[in-house]
Length: 129
Image 1 (cartoon, rainbow, N blue to C red):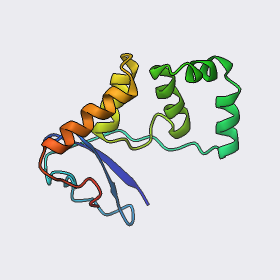
Image 2 (image 1 turned 180 degrees about the vertical axis):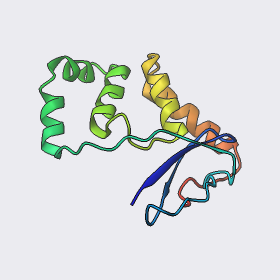
Image 3 (image 1 turned 90 degrees about the horizontal axis):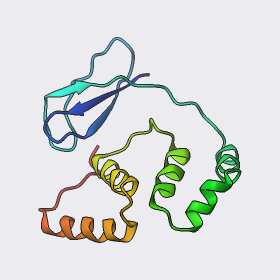
């Protein structure tokens, strides 16, 4: 049973829609903002590894481990990508954090700014499905 992925043209978030069967075409509606103008994305399939394989891969990379120990923000990004894979579903907040970490910003600064921004905005829930 397929999962279709879209990019909402209103809020720019990635939306995944599960479809029961292959003949049914899903009604594409963003479950974050309710937008109906979505652009279909090219989806890839996952290649499964065991947790042990993933950890062995990461811990076997001494350069990455050393960068993590030195609190290198870009090492955190690389670790996260290896843990989840590049094609897993990520929301816009995750993508923002990754971009800022890749730019060298400290995680603590990003967290405090995003928490302050969240407290200033009206309450919304990203957990609605």
